[in-house]
Image 1: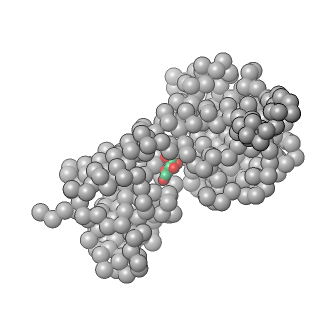
Image 2 (image 1 turned 90 degrees about the horizontal axis):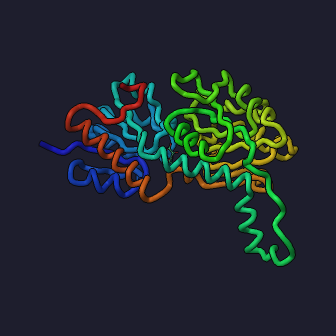
Image 3 (image 1 turned 90 degrees about the vertical axis):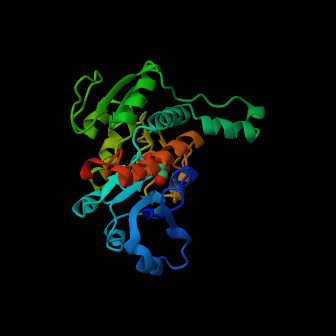
Length: 317
Ligand code: 8YV
């Protein structure tokens, strides 16, 4: 029997190819001199796609070129890069990589929160630039006594909350629904959560449904001692409004791992001394990216072998 044909749309962790190599015929779209000509010649053979945010949006434009496509395996837990509704209409299964990155992203979220509040990158620069020779680093704000709002209490949000439990801070959350068996107070809107807190950690899915859910009013509700941390997607916050409130001093600080138009980071944001910026590294360790890559491959292989993927997204279950 001939091997199933898998199209990779963008480079991803080597574990994907390592696990697939012996079992499928792999094509690398980004290596084709003329990707349109490649799709015209070979699109009809492709049964599976391995994709990631690096490809941009995986949707109708690609699906229409791949009439035999049955499964799209996306590298990442967030799958706002894939049009899962369009896939579902075509009977295409979409998978993501839940579970394997929860702890890693939660670690990073807490690290970024502490780095932002205690101004760790600024302190590091102070030592390197010789500032210490002239006196002590200015006293920083504190996490003590903080009320932390988690926007999106999914698996990663819960992993963040568990870690923060050890920091003796008050925790509350907003999600679409109050969750049974969760002791943290629930607030019915992001605004209500922000009013009750002075730190907001965004860890909810991206996409049209959550676009700019953190708007100017939410940011202002955190108050002038407020801190905003985003480890979700740049799309969930109104980035120009964030810059505005930071410039005005209506918000104390922000720690950002994600941006509206990555890898672009507005100069106005970089000019602010109270902002810590990271290049979307929430899950970016060798250990976790290898696990994510294996899960991408395992989804494809399970589907080709049994007709059932391991971690299909709800829209295509
Ligand atoms: C990756 C992520 O950076 O899992 C996610 O949703 O944001 C990250 O782990 C991204 O998916 C890589 O394509």
